[in-house]
Image (tube, rainbow, N blue to C red; front, side, top):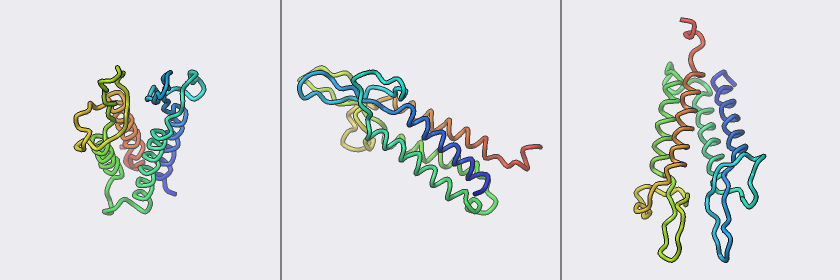
Length: 168
């Protein structure tokens, strides 16, 4: 394991720890046939009563981090493809791909029903150009996703500098 793989491993562990310390929770409405709706990301040690972990969203978050980390681990294994390329260029390319995926599959709001008054909340991730295009994008989660991807890219870009050239 080289220096770059160690950095990727540490950043991945920090990301997974943050995801598991602040999991997504659903709120269950009172009443017959009430569906659970996304509520918030609460600290694991201070969950309000009546909240359930949104296991589907938690699974997606963990898998996104694990797949991204595995790809970075493989690419940084025996030298970056192409020979002398700076691994920080790979971070920029990876961040661009992650942002493109986030914008192609954004979080959408639930569809308001004429039968009942609903509060807008997170419904799911759908292909932007698919059949759900008339729904609104749920901006709080999209902004959070973009912020975390950009923060991770900035941290990795700073940490993956060449230590021989850092003293210049």
